[in-house]
Image (tube, rainbow, N blue to C red; front, side, top):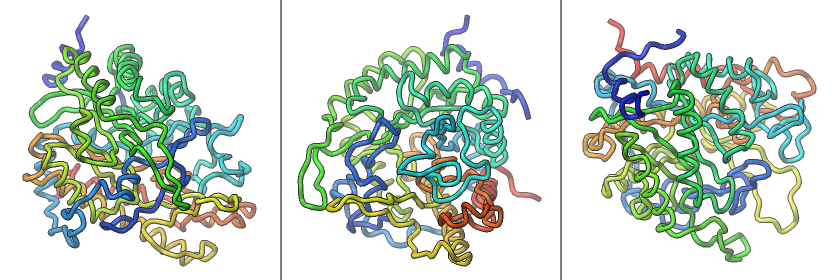
Length: 464
């Protein structure tokens, strides 16, 4: 039987045939949707990210971030695309959709958050084209895979909430379907309990064993860098948080899932030691509240999830990472348009998070819904241009280290309105949903179609 290293080496020698054909600087950072310090494992929601904490506390920026105003030179897509395709023969695998297998219909799961009453009244600001679906439905996953493959994206990053969780149980079927559409799979480790750091290494070893080894690596995402080294990549959310937080009343509280950087370092070092004989390389990416802490904790770099961190701030963050030889990954995104609480306790610090890109919309008006849709498409183009340019910049660490990795946030996080999964056209909403204030635009396929156009700029040679 081949060892993992022998198997990975064979990938370089043979072609793989598919089985089938917000923030601008020192201004305060808006808190995420829940406005609370810790996640709630009962509903699988994340809580506030480490990045958001750092931006609000002023630990995640310096003058290089604040002073950037117009960082974008003209883009020569033909040259950038040709260089990326030459450097990374599996380039489509380096574009990774964030994917959520956490929905259910019997009983309802996630669609009924915050007092929503499915199937008409769901925890989303727009109605999916497929309606409120079950993540364990093979027909749903099949349609997702077709949509993803059609854009040119070659991988997904599954939101994972621990061994034996609902999301973990959904993985085998998701992988079976994605494999048949030549889409590879990796994992986004979520804050499923406050002490999850203690099982960080063992969780990753579990994922490699269960969904790599036992499946003979049929569709586990293994990225090849510019020097030919191949290995897995894992991203985590709410990884390196601050020790305390201050609420709107000035009350300072300890953050329960804070741990010293040395605690993370024991996990990352132990994992690398355990896997040294198995892989050429392994990339561990985190969201952090202070870039200086990343190296101390043993992470390779930062991967921002938040769509509040505007692309204008990314060049400065990339420079900070590069100054410490750390990697960076900023996501292609369409902004944020999340659900809001309908009932708020008096004295609560909760306020609904504003739509990003910023705007005030009357969602009952078709013209306002179309304006919001156009704004989201513009954010997609800006975020795509910015992340590709930064990763292609010779002076920055990603190019120096031969790593290119772009997450797309998200395929189907409907609660936060970040989804690229198609929505229903506004004209197709039934009467019982039109009165609920959904934000569906006239063309519910617009985001996915625009993403396909953007990816073609680098994935496909220009036509003669």
